[in-house]
Length: 365
Image 1 (cartoon, rainbow, N blue to C red):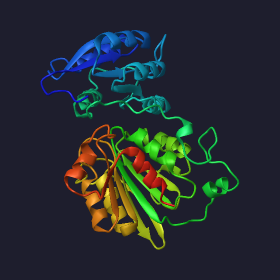
Image 2 (tube, rainbow, N blue to C red; image 1 turned 120 degrees about the vertical axis):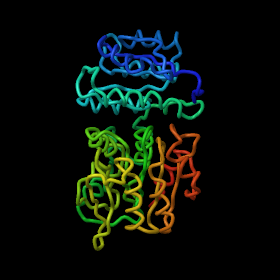
Image 3 (spheres, rainbow, N blue to C red; image 1 turned 90 degrees about the horizontal axis):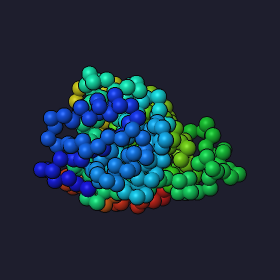
Image 4 (cartoon, one colour; image 1 turned 90 degrees about the vertical axis):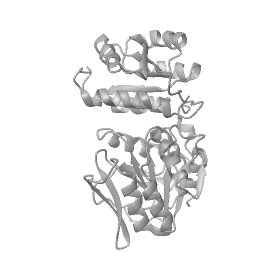
């Protein structure tokens, strides 16, 4: 899927609002790297244009007449897998994650239903996400839709564990320190990868999991709730002072940074504002460095798909502390930036495709 440096990215804009279609297309006026090849007002028209024009990437509104964005995604991914950037309002957080689970690559959050031509930050985000297509792995195919049947262990239809002991295990207030602390760094493509990993963790796991996923602040709580429903790990958006125990998971809040500290026999979560030297927010480097200091050889650093190089220095700290570092292999990483940077630095002891990473984390029992 990697585009050559000389050929422009071919973009199809899909939105039921003519105003939004025009303003999204205007983002790329005068940009030699992107060519808007078509615009569609609903899913049916978008499918027809996608088949005819063969775009490299599609921006997609989810709420449309005749055929909504979800139906469009299901059909598109079965017929003609194409990178899709969802452009959705803050009020549609659940819908955004449903779209990601159906194979959308990433999303841009708009504060209102209409995209103002002077919304500079939003326009820059749309440009950045579309240009990301150049960094996708060769022969990129979006991940298949995630079903509850992919979740390991004994679970009900809502994804919650069932059985005689499971409710007690998940609801127990007794603190049990984790034998391993799994610190995960991820960005573009990360939500689907994290759902796969969390879905494989069994009730017998002895690990605690902390996540630095690059994501807007209004979406991290909803994402943590989706991870919580995926399987056995009691997962939430982190709050300063939370205890990291066995079978607990925390997602760093957007626009904040998270660390893990040793507090007597307990491991505690620290959440605070980013520092001047934090190049990414949330900062995977800060999280992984803190896990290295708090857990030492019990630390496991995992660097998943994403742009940039966040997590490399934190992974180095985990390895130096005697812990294990795993990087996602290029064959499954949607964007090989973050894991590739760690591999080039010679840090990971293991480089594994995503399913094997999920199996390794699930084996910590």
